[in-house]
Length: 199
Figure 1 (cartoon, rainbow, N blue to C red):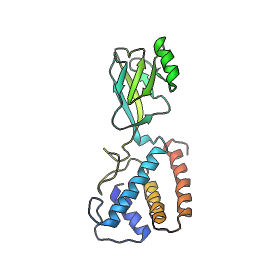
Figure 2: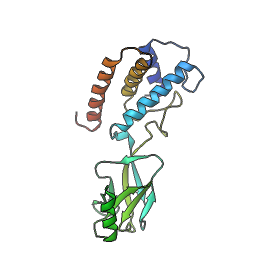
Figure 3: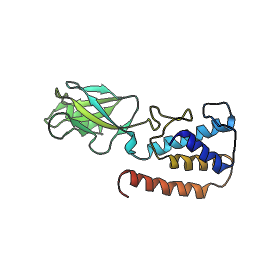
Figure 4: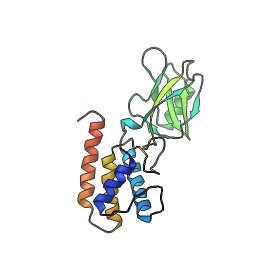
């Protein structure tokens, strides 16, 4: 589904009928709805590890640290880092800085990684075959982190963006929105489970 479909459904629900609405145009109401669509999308994208947002990042061997990709949001919660080569050889993520300091002072055969200051650090240095890192991207729209035009393709559930935009619009206009917010939250839980194959 495209952003245009979401926009048209939102307009229908809130009772606006502008001719040929364009997200990239100058119409104030459409620009306002576009901003609400982006707020909704950012919120939804950040509330779960949507399968459409996973990225596999190949890191070359021999490195002790590497800059994070520009679209990096967070490491995947399961199987986020592994050494390339034969078999599955996980790299354990260390969160606590003091634990990382200890591990770098006493390197072991078990590989570890740590996120700090926009870099992913490794101990010991990556072997020659390198590693694959799975992370969650900030780009919830195809190729970018927000909606800018009607033809944009969403990588998160469009119906959630639609519902979240409508309740945000109603809240902004001082209209009742509690029921719509509750319905959105219930649908969000259901869609997260469905995306994970739970249901």
